[in-house]
Image 1 (tube, helix red, strand yellow):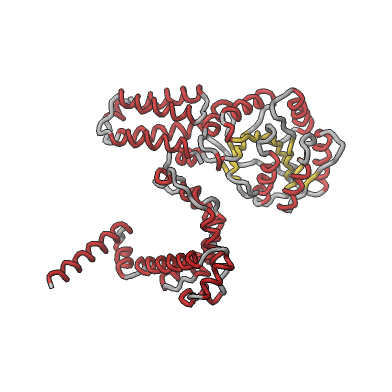
Image 2 (tube, rainbow, N blue to C red):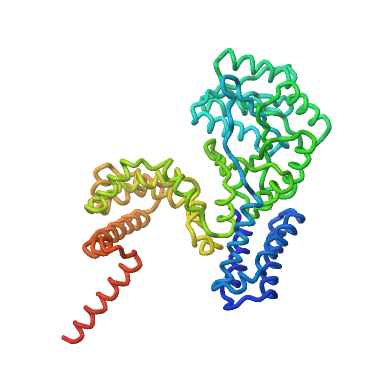
Length: 461
């Protein structure tokens, strides 16, 4: 996510940090590079111009120039302004008490409205609301069937009626929802390849007759300024309450995310970060700014972990690590939890300071699948006692997992090394230093010094 713009910002900030003293001239040089990076990210020209003016006004102030770390001060100013550019945002959906909450999704064809309808319904369902999807797109072939497939996957009812106009379908859907005690319905409306009068007239009729509680504009973040321009046109002609950006996980530039709020005045409320129906997240400008600037996103990483990691299982794992009784069965369980958190590259990218080290590095997601296949090809006894795996057993496991005997040997070797590392971490030195409040870095330095002292003693002997 945002690899291109993040890489550009990291280079610019490294230059600013390396200067012992900043002047107005080299600050303006740095901000000129920031402007180029934003324009290359397909950010709206006027948005970039206003952004640079605000940052420049603050960056050349005497308080910054005379500060101990002016480079850091400028980075902080850029981060704050970026947060202001995309926020503030309230990603909650106010539900109507005692009545039906109607959410209408609009947007161009290909933006991902139908899939987003399912994702949004799934998220609302998790909040304890009885949700229903409405197939109001009668233009696109197979749109109704696609929505029904999504509804079946999520166990959410889908209302559809053939041969009726979209407005009548929506009206009957509301009556059906009331009769069946549904308190939230999501209207999946028709899109077009471009904005036209016929499309807008149909959407205006639905808005006027149905009076939806919320209208959300769905757009493909990877289309950059095209997404921003279509959002502006939809907001001018129809009006909407917020934006859902789709395919954000594949967006290397980030121009749409940075521009859309400033151009339309309407906030980004949710973002789609994957193809699966649970891959929708609330939008947080502060976290997004941090990720764009290569500073990671620890809060989102922790939230992802909390959703998939069982606390009781985590406590058991901690105890096993301390007792040095970790098995491949435990390792498989942890591996599955990590995979449920999403793309490995995205997870690593959320860790502060890792972003620049990932530049140009290809993370092989299939490697995790191969490791899982190898472990699954083992018997329970072999998972519990990996030392028993030798010769013919390795060949049998390799054959069953579609890998080689060398792959099996490599996994067993890495598992032993991991256990050895955990044993050192939970040894006497670790306990002593944890008690005294020393960091892991201090513990490593201590071990190196102790090792050197032993070598010196041996030489003296």
